[in-house]
Image (cartoon, rainbow, N blue to C red; front, side, top):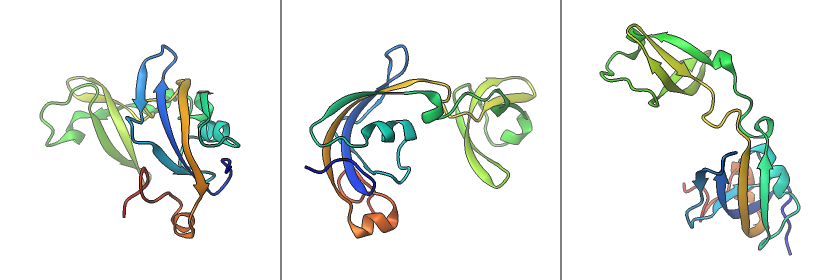
Length: 160
């Protein structure tokens, strides 16, 4: 039986919950596929899947540092309202792509005032301890093509 190690293709079903037990995401019957050891999923989950095999179930609790990072207050900034030209009705919760220092990032609107918009560049799950209920569906050796591309192809993976 193949176990999860570097360069294995893994398919798993999951339900992701926050500290309060709220469901944040789930695989919805279509397993998630990833290439183990290639940073395709958050480090804390990948580490807890290491050595497991198809058919196993586990509850993986992942602290913020091994998930989407700690919440950074300095990532919350005021942006002049005029930077949002062409957007009539800006509402809290809306997301926009922003470019800074040659890097594209997603920002979420926290508050809208007369002449400024408060945006947050933290990942929406930053600072949160996450719990994944996982069922491993399949573990196999990755193909040469998948290894050269750095991700899984086919069912549950990347189509191209």
